[in-house]
Length: 101
Length: 432
Image (cartoon, rainbow over all chains, first blue to last red):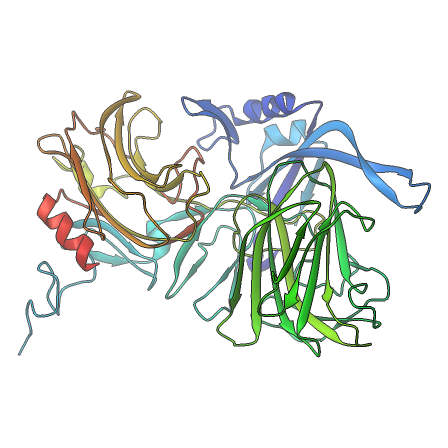
């Protein structure tokens, strides 16, 4: 990371978008800037620090004609929370992977 | 002899500061200058920026600058770009010579070993002689969803060929939605068998040799999104030079961004001035300023008609219950509204929808006189106002604190002032 800054990326994994959102809400408890929240305008995710949820994929079976192995979805949902120069114990507890850069 | 009032707005003389004389907080993103309480301040004292990724932004000369995490994406002469999160479907979009890309039949991709426009590594794609068979390509697994638009942008130059050929498809077996033509008109011939190609635009950049082609591809299938590009020529060895390709889910282009990640993500930019002690609303802690204020704003609007809500600013007490917000609504009308306790306390809407271009607005809110908005087209609207929030503590620029409606465009300046009269708002809006 340039300029001496450290980014800690927490990968969260859940069986559904709703379950993933529940993880983000739980990790947001008591924080000034939550990772996810609900208000009169609806459900929100902090796009400045949280990569919006996306489908988990794995390498699929080989195409019988081309031999290519196209990824297939697993049914699980992932997202990443990237924090700059800070860490979060709640995220550490619920992450399936933590990377620093 | 000091010239006063000649060629200047009524409220400014040749020797006065750049900010409005009644501004308590002022930011000029075009020239990177800031002031609070009439004292010049550095940006770091005025703003906080949260964005967990870098950001690329091009200036008026077309050259891109790279901005670090949590850094305001701002360029002199353009302003500050404040936008939503964007994930590209294609990796290494700024260097097609890398392994993220592959060749279709008979193509050859050669890095030119140079940099262009600050961020691109140009790649020459050469053909083997078949007119449209030689292409550089990348497929995004599951990147196409029936009916959901993909905004595509391509930076390229003529090589020894002056014709370009692009395909959007589920696979190399088709069907295809193609664009083909001379480099200055890539949409000369368009087919839409895999989905529609709309919002077509091509621009010659200030360097005089680089073209930017943009379009929205809306697939008519569910599956992979395959992007292919090459020269359209029957001459063996002719080349097309490609600088960068980006495709992202959405109906409009955002600043080009790419990394080697399989799904390069540029996070949103949350730009705020947050109360710390008596800042940033130091002036507002005094009487009146908590109950009446004006906001002056200049922004650039690049897209209309896409049905999106885009915020210019919001001042709140940290909740969604009490706030003054100003935004372009989905129908492209500018709205200024005060919410107290979650209920509408006063709202105005400019009577005519905006078009693309420079937008100047002045909003003044005072329960004694109401809420009033004026723009640089000479349009205005007024309404009664029951009250203002008593404890403003957060200024959110280019979005609401709820991450709603990012501006996805540039802000030139923003000033928070002691209340202005309707006449003062009008004078500023027409002179800014």
